[in-house]
Amino acid sequence: MMVSNIQKNSLVKWCNLFACDRKQLNLALYISWLILSCIIFLILIMPFILPTAAILKITPKCEWKIKYNKPCPACGMTTSFLYISEGKFNQAIVSNHNSITLYILFLLNELIFLIISILIVKKYKKNLSYVSLK
Image (tube, rainbow, N blue to C red):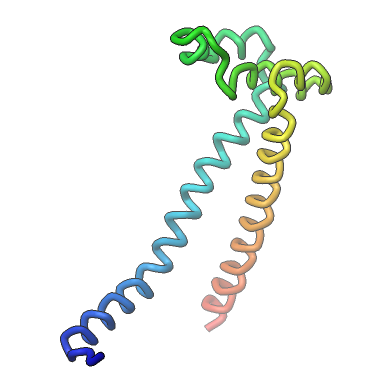
C-alpha cells in the first residue's frame, strides 16, 4: 500500500500537534485533578469543622429516593462519612456498605495527589534555581 506525500504530511502534522499539546494536556489533567482533590478534601475535612446537624442540614436529599421511593447506591453516604469521622465504623457500614471503601479511596487520592504535587514542586524548584544561577 502506497502512502502519498499529502498523507505523510498530514500524519506528521498530527504527530507534531499531539507532541506540542502533550504538555498542555498534562497541565489540564493536573488542574482537573487539583479541583477534584480540593472537593474531596473538603468532603473529608467537613465533619471535623462543622457540627453533624449543620452538615445534615446543608446536604441535599436523595432525588432518587424522593422520586422512586428506593435508595440509590449513594444513599446514606453522608451519614456514613460522618460515622467514619467519629470512628463508628459498624454504624457506617449499616448506613452504606460501600462507604468505608470510598472513604479509603478518597484518602488514597489525597495522599497520592500530595506526593505528586511535592515531586512536581521539587522538579520545578530545581529548574528555577538552575535558571537563576545563569
